[in-house]
Image (cartoon, rainbow, N blue to C red; front, side):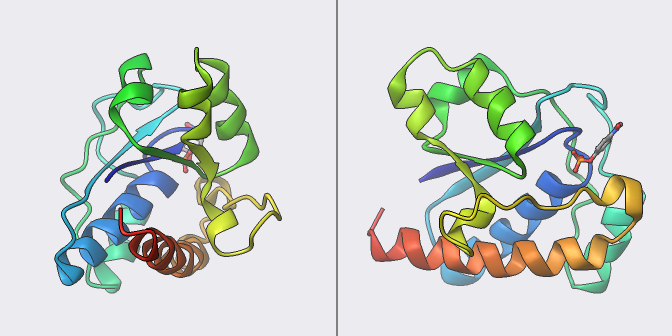
Length: 153
Ligand code: 4NP
């Protein structure tokens, strides 16, 4: 199972989501791959926002070595599941999809926690609420892992 976390800048939400999923994958011994990307490319080559790095450190996660990159057309074929943080990310991703197979891979991550509610992971870049974002993603990713494990993927 190959999973791609996607947000706007790839320096706040999707790096945190990547770090959380990587740690759960390691703990559970699952043969899954995870990466993250941004729809904008505005922070290409940069590390995560230092506030995200610091918050993750307080929760025992080191995300400092991640590097921001822009989502590519190749990602749409390579990954099995492409998880958007909000509906704007979702629209940007589906806008570059060419096939229904690609579109079917794109989901809003919080629908794993609150099915069919289409809720957004609030962007902490502007309000600094990184702890809330971490807790929300941690819960959603627990549900994601349960759901994918049950499907025996
Ligand atoms: P992210 O947050 O999409 O969670 O990485 C943002 C990062 C940077 C910007 C906006 C949101 N920005 O405007 O540069």
